Length: 195
Ligand SMILES: [Zn+2]
Ligand SMILES: [Zn+2]
Image (cartoon, rainbow, N blue to C red; front, side, top):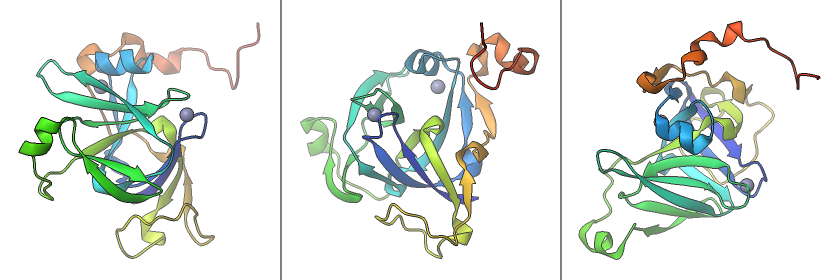
């Protein structure tokens, strides 16, 4: 289902909006996701770069190099550290200002000279699903596929909980923590366990 998502970081300095397919959500158990999140796995939702708008704030980037030499840009809030998305660091990166795409820039000047902007290159942002605040089903919202600059949702829209973004599959299960398949067996408390 095509949806519009709104998200933010913990300190609210970063706010974004994107178009997405709700069935594209996946769990990643790779060791980089474990290390970068400080948790057992990350939950990601890939969206096209052209379907993402940063509505507020400035993202800081950390570049990690994979075993195969690919450079991945990890983009996060420089104030609170919340991870927002990751993308290909060697593709052109769009700098967002107030919901409008204004500037294209490259990872280095050498790449700027050798790479020309092309609509044939599909660049994805892997949104961290924990940052999504609101999900709205687009078949009730709009007839076109554009991302507007508005940051509001009309009363006739179908607002769904961000919890509805259920993963469709898991990847890098070879490095998954063994206990993640046994969560139902671990005692649950609605809030902190009182000592
Ligand atoms: Zn923040
Ligand atoms: Zn991963």
